[in-house]
Amino acid sequence: MAGLTTHVLDTVLGRPAAGVEIELFELKPDGARLLVAQVRTNADGRTDSALIPAAEARRGSFELVFHIGDYFRAKGAAMAEPPFLDLVPIRFAVADASAHYHVPLVATPWSYSTYRGS
Image (cartoon, rainbow, N blue to C red; front, top):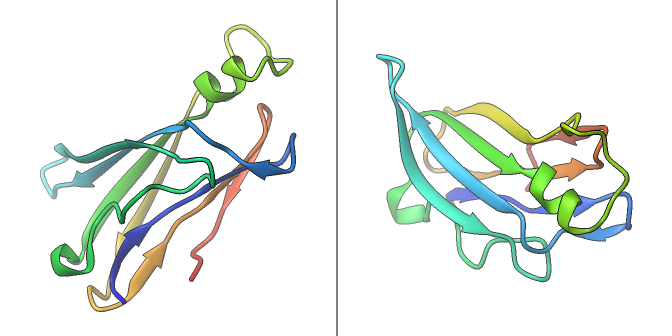
């Protein structure tokens, strides 16, 4: 299965993060950012469909932008103002268009991590 998927985990509450806005940009060689998708996570912290379906998979550089500050603010989490983490950008490259790329975010208002999942 090729394509791009993601999910978000809230490690403060120890569960999937529902309602997180996510933008996906394709980064062009000239520095331009092309908006490919804008979605919100569902109750399982995932998107309802792939951000890039297998039929549209391609090599290139991309950026996921997670609106994590808005999510934690809506949850009433203790945060600084302005928040320490507001928009979390993750830049990555797809080298093999026939492979599946899963790029999740694990977050608190003060930290985050990511990895290439399966």
